[in-house]
Length: 350
Image (cartoon, rainbow, N blue to C red; front, side):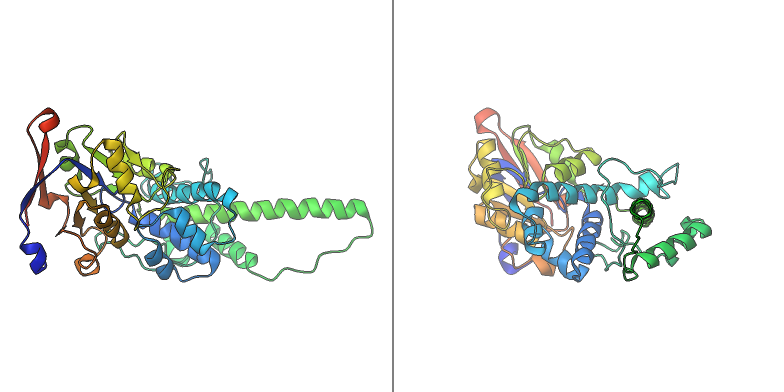
């Protein structure tokens, strides 16, 4: 803790709480990193760079930066697909991998993304959780039948070979039959590749987790006194919270909220959340984990408590947070008073 932070009072009062979601309430970092790793490979960028550049920001802003070819009218659909891919990575281990009763990826659930094979980069999450990315095909042999692995490796190798010159037929009927045959083979190859990614994605547990102290913190705050303001769009935000037993509060500001002019690090999400609760953001507490989110909270005028759940303390200590704690277990919240006079008393325990 810095000298400035150590001199601040350990106890203070507020009207309401504004929570970030991922990295603050939930931990879906592994799935998020896997999804951005896929994007990085699709565009030929370094996964580690893309992951670092996208953390804590809206998918719409990140996709606009890294996939500038996406047209404005296509962006909502692209964000939807991307966030579905996050939830796919989060669920794959328990649905298709060792965590499932039936370890068969043959059938794909609706909304399963068409993933492209590629290597991966190391995860930035805590050492207690597995890496965000899957290993090589050879490392996964223990969870596949050897015959399928050999066949799959061949298919993926074939898919990377240069295209052959198109066959020329004098007979139009033969040409039509050939095209139909090639189309069926292409569909078959794409299906096999999708199955391969389902298997690879299912090899690592990237399931969404609730973070320490979150359950007690939420239960200590009266209804109508807290909101969520996240850089995730509705599909991802609601999907993550419900997966760990958190009921999204009535005021949940997501990245696809059309009332927002800008996302974090701009203060707009927190300002809107406070307004919808009926309070001034200056009288609220913001819980955040990322540099961009912390800066957004500070810019809103709120008292910002940063949690070291996704970043090392040294990476967030210069972002302006009023308090930095290990996690929410180090913060106590108690309602004081009743009705319009109700206040939330916060105590920093470290």
